[in-house]
Image (tube, rainbow, N blue to C red; front, side, top):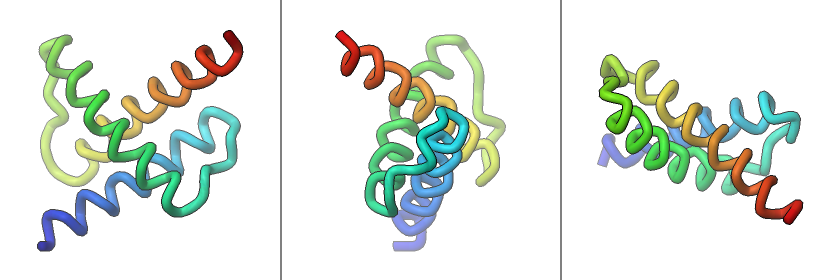
Length: 82
């Protein structure tokens, strides 16, 4: 159960940070969690394709999820413009 809670916390932090960096200001509590969790999946895939590891731990997980969330927001904005 505590692993699930940490997964939610990492998603929330990563989604919130990605919203700030991408000049969105955040997407609300649930939106940030969803963006962070999907970003974690995307970031994990990208990092594995590049042969990189997250370094483990909470900070590494947040970093991977953040990178994936930024990619997700960027792609969503490209699709929205098209």
